[in-house]
Length: 167
Image 1 (cartoon, helix red, strand yellow):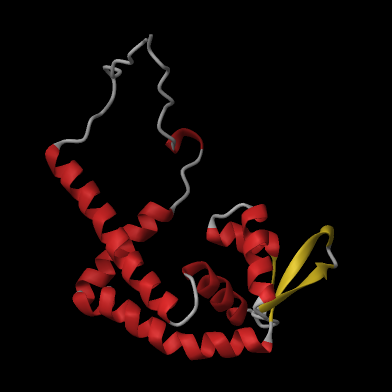
Image 2: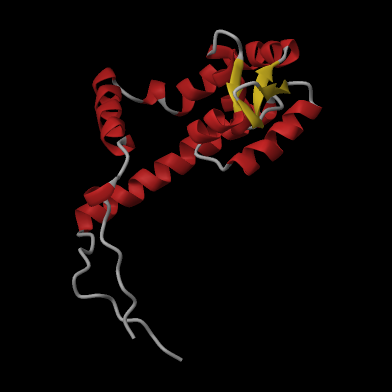
């Protein structure tokens, strides 16, 4: 049985950093759990709502499966399985992608648009209750600024170096 010893070059979190990281994780879980529970009470999941709202914002209520998967950070196969379930509920339909013979388009149906329209007021109230109304305008501005920094993709030299396993 081998045990790994921590690499000596690891930049461990100091107490302030660890508290900030753990607080961030707790609040993300709490807010998402609350809004997900509220969506479930009206018959939708967070991914359902994201797909419906994204499609509703498009002028033709259509997106490629690949574009939607990228937006959600999902694999195409995962989104395809989810879209199958949404299609069975009449929320969207699939259509061939004229620009990609192997791809498909996700198209919002009238039922999907109605479902979103009925769910949106309750969802906005949930977001307000679990997030917006708990913060001052300057807090929201700071969160937006921080989120923009964090959402920048890590590429090339920005990625942390891989640690080689020690024996």
